[in-house]
Structure formats: C-alpha cells, structure tokens
Image (cartoon, rainbow, N blue to C red):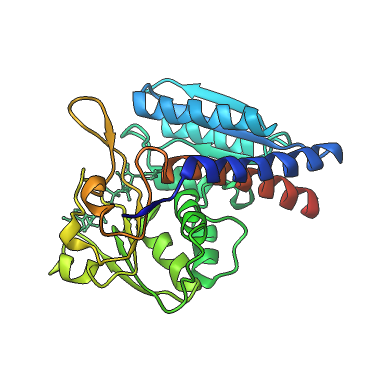
Length: 284
Ligand code: NAP
C-alpha cells in the first residue's frame, strides 16, 4: 500500500516560504505583484484564475486581474502585455491559457518580457531550462519535482518515465528529471508497448489527460507515481490519469487527484513571482 504524497500540505509549506520572501522584499520597498490576464469566460479558466488570486492574497503578493471579453483581438492583447511589461508594480505576467482562436498563443507568450514570464513558457526561459541555467521553472513540473523530493528518494540513476510530451508539462518534466541524473524516457500517443516501458519506471509521471489511463498492470511494484492529470468525469467529480485505487496497492508513493500536483502548480507560481520581483530589483 503506497504512502500518500500530500500536495496540499507540501504546497502550504512552499506558499509560506513565498510569503516570507515576499514580505522581506516589500520591506525593502520592492513591489511583488502578479498580473493575471483572462480572455473570455471559460469556466475552468475562471476557476484557475480565482485560485491564483486567492494564493496571491495568502502570500501577500499584489494581484491585478485583467478580464477581457472573448472577442478581444490579438493586437489588443499584445498592447496589454506591452503595458504590463513596462509596469513596475507587476513582477510577473500570467496569461491564462487557452486563448480564443483568433489569438495566436505563441505570439502572446513571445511578447511577455522573459524576466516577467512566471509560467516559464517564453522561448528564452525554455532554452535556459534546456541548458540548466534558469531563473524560473515551469510551475507544474517544478511542483512535481518538489513532490518527488518530499519522498526522500534520490532521482539519480532511477528509471524515470514521463507519459506526455506537451511543452508545458511532459517535455520540461523530462528535462528536470534529466538535470537530476534520472534515466528518462518520454512516451506519447505513438509510443509502442507503452505498458512494457512504464513497468520499468522507478518514477512514473502521467500527464496524458485521460481519466484512469494508467492501470495497475502498467506500474512497477514500489514505483513513485505522480499524477498530473485533471479530468472531469460525467458525474462532475475530478479524477487523475492514474487508476488511483488499484495503483496505490503497488506503488510506494502516489499523489492523489485532487490534492496532489494541482496545489503545487499554484504554489510554484507564487515562488516564481517572488523570484521575478527579486531579479527585477537586482537588475534595476
Ligand atoms: P496535452 O497537451 O493534451 O498532452 C497530452 C500528452 O499525452 C500528449 O503528449 C499525447 O501524445 C499524450 N498521449 C495522449 N494519448 C496517449 C496515449 N494513448 N498513450 C501515450 N500518450 C498519450 O496535455 P497537457 O497540457 O500536458 O496536460 C496533461 C494533463 O495534465 C491534463 O489532464 C491537464 O489537465 C493536466 N494538467 C494539470 C496541471 C496541474 O496543475 N495539475 C497543469 C497542467 C496540466 P501526443 O503528443 O503524441 O499527442
């Protein structure tokens, strides 16, 4: 029976650290603020934005919400990003994705000042992560690393398997495990014999977006299992990418959904905002 990795508890510790750091910066007169931009009225995006604002309030970080209508043009959003890049109260800029189809996400991300890119999606920050010399880490993979570290297990030399190769989760997750000397395999929808690969994983990270996709027969006895997936079931309940009830009988450590990776993503965002504020003050 696996030990539960308690993302709620660990994220509270991370947020407390961010709050202490934010208070110390503010005492020196350095503003610590997060601009959150939401375009349209996607209910899931609204929930995420509200959670981020709540976390800011808890950590003593000023938050500035910019809620734009769904028919906002790309030029209008670019103009707002430009304005926020130049706003000294704003340490970090977060544009909630997905964006309406008339707006090119890449153009918007590329327009954010890399020093304010607290999601670490800008190509400059992605490149820095690749070479291991980074200011910010992408929030979800970084949160997953904290959860793995909380188990006390040394990643070096472990077989690490990441299912999913998205730019925001799978790829950076694999890179962070590699930086810590894991032996990393990335799987995706074209991977052959997936279960045969996942059964070799000492550390298995699922970022697929399919409810209960990872079944017990895909998991090695004693593996650490990190479930990034957030899937809404027809009855409205949330569930991860891992068949939690069956897999917990085999894993040594496992994250629940909800209460695992999700809270860590927001906690890391708070840390990144504080880091952004510090970096901008140092370079001013
Ligand atoms: P995504 O962009 O849709 O990527 C999903 C990945 O899964 C793709 O690389 C896809 O492969 C792969 N995949 C799909 N079917 C597969 C199969 N049958 N076998 C193996 N691989 C398969 O999703 P994402 O943005 O990375 O997010 C993944 C999940 O994490 C979602 O549930 C999302 O809601 C959740 N999420 C949670 C948080 C959090 O804070 N907890 C944050 C971000 C995302 P291809 O590349 O070949 O298509």
